[in-house]
Image 1 (spheres, rainbow, N blue to C red):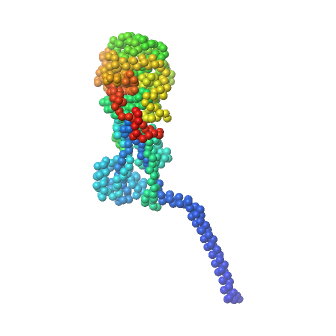
Image 2: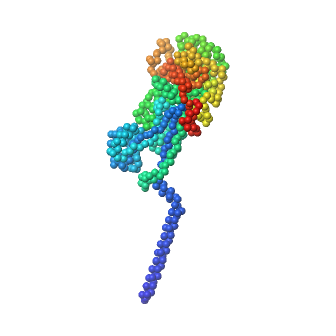
Length: 638
């Protein structure tokens, strides 16, 4: 038998082994935990500090102020103004629906807005604000503030909103801003901010990146649920560049007001030497502020349904037969080809015959009699140019037209520009499969048929005609064009069009006579102010064919013809005649005769421009978007 002492000794040794094993296990486990803690808290401390800060600190982007848009004299066209809006914090309301019902009695909230608010409330955390209504008037802000005790969770917030001071008068040039569409999202978080706007049309779109600026940031400390506690750091962004346009806001408003007396029209005024566009207007127009606020469905549908197309910038995207304003192109083509001299005469009896068809002159009864080239232009004799076109052919006419900027986009800094159309034999065969016909030469010679131009192209054509024959191109921003400086009266920076000075002088003499000779078609629209006389060319383009029966029975007066069937009225001009500075192109859709309707408008614009040049203050020297420059409030030489 084992003694009691021996058994006790065995139990003691067993306990000691187990205690050692247990203690060793505990030491091992503690060592592992200690090592892990050392790894996490020492070796990986920086990583986990960043993760903790990411959970604790919420980084928010701050939208930068959008750059202003100003005219050539520093007058504001587009600015940023305070946007007062109502926001609601759902967790503080008790019932969002009940709060909106009370709020609706103070500030109307339509059903569309209510549905949007409920969607955002369901999507966001309850302590995050939801925008109820923007662009509040001061009266609306006051009413909400007075009733604040009855509106738990409702607050007035202040943001920034784009505002266009001239509204409709400047809409087609400046464009508008609107929230980014899904297709615009490029991964830039700035575009996903709820209040952020991007340029949608006009120079707002062309210079959008420069006008945007750079975003700022705000570091907000939040709790585990994401609720803001305090702002730790704030860095303001960089405002967008201001954009200085070549437009003269006074002249733009003047021209818009002058055109608004007609249902649909457009006008362009530009400096013939450097291509600066001072007026570019199209009527009817629209209010760009409506797009910034969020245009309503009924208003949008009414704009789309308007047959006078207010959303189209007719100055750059309206394509029209130029009518007799095209005749200088035909005359120059004939002179430069050596087919005729300025003394070449044609007898006009009111029409010419080609096969069994008669091509009429606008003066179909009796005709103009015998005319040389200058008289043919002054009196706008169609028969004279029918004869030139038979000798020339359409291809030589087209080649000259393209030298003067017709048939191709001018590349002005606006979206949506159209190229127009200058037909050739190859073009027609390729487009229709039908060869060019001799009669189409005659129609093209008086700016009809397939020939299409824009008002901007006609202004460019006129500028090249009177600036000494340099291929000036139009632009809307000051100080730089394609990376080079273009100051006033520097046409020689542009290449020559390749037409002799003798030919240009003949055109200038004829265009002077159109307005200032009693036999000229625009004599009644002349400028009588000393030193400000203008030259130009009238145009009337048909939109439908006049039948022989109508000619026999007598043509109806314009007010007896449906608006859509009336002729377009056109005029191109320049001033002053002795030292040309400005060129203008005017079209009045279905306005009737160019001499009676378009020429007086052009006269008024040219006269006002010359008075403005004499009386206006110096133009500011300033960078345009994306270019370095000086402060917009400084002034320099005009």
